[in-house]
Every structure is written in C-alpha cells, then in structure tokens.
Length: 267
Image 1 (spheres, rainbow, N blue to C red):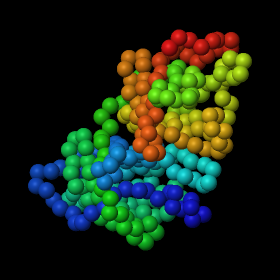
Image 2: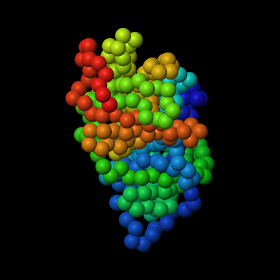
Image 3: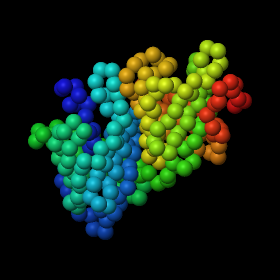
Image 4: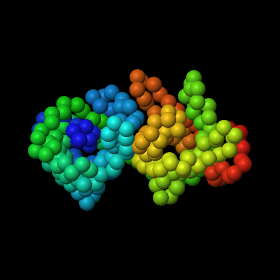
C-alpha cells in the first residue's frame, strides 16, 4: 500500500516567493497543454515525461505513467484538480487517483508562448509537506496530430544494431484503443487477443497502455511513451531510455490491418 501511495505522487516543481511582473499575463500564457522535457535542465527519459494542462475553466489536468504495483504500470490521466494564479505562482488543489489530497504552489521562473520553466514553492500531500528543489522545463503542445495519426501503420525497429527485425501492424482507432498484430511461426498475422491497448496523444508525445508484453514475456499492465514525427505516409518514433540509449521505429501508413493469409509487404 505504501508503494502504491508513493507511485501516485505527482512529481512536479520547487521555488521561493510569488511575484507580479508588470506586463506579463501569466493567466493567459499558462493556458494549454505542456509536456515536461527537462528536469534541472537535463533531458528526461521519454517514459518519465508528464503532461499538464491548464484549462480556461480553472481545471488542471495531469497525465503520467505510474508504477501501480510490482507487476503493473499504467499511463493515467487525472482532472481532479483546480488552479488559480497569484502573480507568477500557480496554486493547485485536488485529489489524485488514490484519493490523497494535494496542495501545490508552483513558481513560474520563465514563460513564453512555447516554453515554461517552473519550480515548486510548496508541495503537500494529506497536509504533509514534501520539499522539491528541482526545476521543470516544459514545452507547449502546439499541433494536433490526431487525424494524421489514426489509422493503420506497418513497420519495425530502426534502432541501430537492434536484434528485433520483426514487422508489426498497429491499428489506431477513433475510440482511443488500438489493435496490435504480429506474425506467428507460420507467418500468419494474429491480432493479439490480450493486448487491451489504449493510446493518448499530446501533440508529438504518444503514450500507450497495453498488457502482457509479447517481446519480453512479462505479464501484467505496461505502458510506454514515444516522441513521434509524421511525414506524409511515414511515421518515426524515438524514445530516450535508460543509460542514455535511444530507441526508434519507422513505419508506413497502410490501407488497413492484415487479413488472413496476407504476407509481409515491402518496406
């Protein structure tokens, strides 16, 4: 239970006092979705990115991947927070998915229409304070790739030296779910029946939930995040992983998922 409690903590920002910079409209500048890309000016692992959104109705939403227990990880969205601005400070109150009460005060260190860096002035959970002296740099989501992203993609790993040269199909649906297809030992394409795939797209950041990883054999819930780029009918994924390694995939958009008896196509 203690592990679950701490896995549900929202890891955000640090700082000193609130200021009112003349001519800076913080309330307007913070509106929108922001993707965390750096902590203390160092790049974050792609799977450790989080997404925050400040809406015009005073609601703050938060999305991040959480370790639920020893065998399960999941990307979770939460909109149980309210916020307001006090000068250059963002004051947030609400509850996480575990039912814990949060009070957070974030000091904006710098902001423009595309980038925001802030620190944590106060971070409290159930009335207990947790100091955080880090700074967090975030970029604003400026483009919606949803319409270009939805559909069926066919491709494989493009990581240099990768031993995984297997082709895959991903079929991204309108309802936020996706189907994953792989070839069995006879070359027949199989729609993985226990995938339970769901996806979230925030500009160029893709987060996917799935179950029972086919490549590693690990059972339970899992998630992964990728930075994506779409050029016409081609899509590229990159992810910064442990030890500074970068993994990548390349794929092409196709007319639909494989049908029984279909073979691999040229790529």
